Image (cartoon, rainbow, N blue to C red; front, side, top):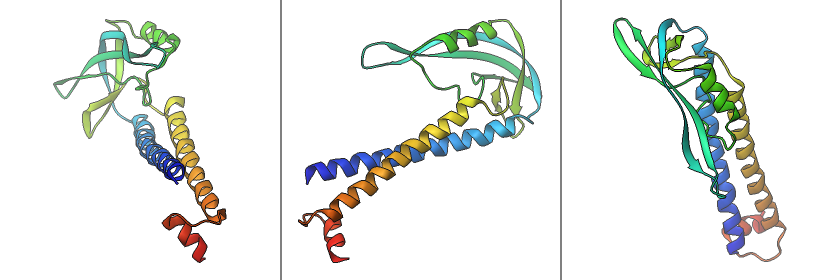
Length: 174
């Protein structure tokens, strides 16, 4: 019985995690689409680093390229770090991060797309990236994996002849 509850809890956590991450990804996907038509401002790269944001179980660092830039909108100075929507993922391998650092050296002048409703929200590469699409797909896959596990748990409980939980009692009654 404990194994069944553990399995159901694991699957519920997968559904919840996948749903939250899918919502976040869907939100970013919408913002990425909108950013393609945002106004532009002149900006400058003021910082660039490969930041360690955690460690894998084997001790290897997870790194993310962080590009900081400044720009002015209507006489007000702003700073931001988003290069594209979906760039907030730390990776074990550093190739993409190093390429990003090379593309945005400190001092480079850039065009910054900013949200006219909230000029603090900005991006250097407006539009939908493959990263934000991939984030949504992975999140949906995690949620579906959890949902499939819950369905499997329910089928297994209904197929069992012994009734030891409320779920199994409902199966026996139907």
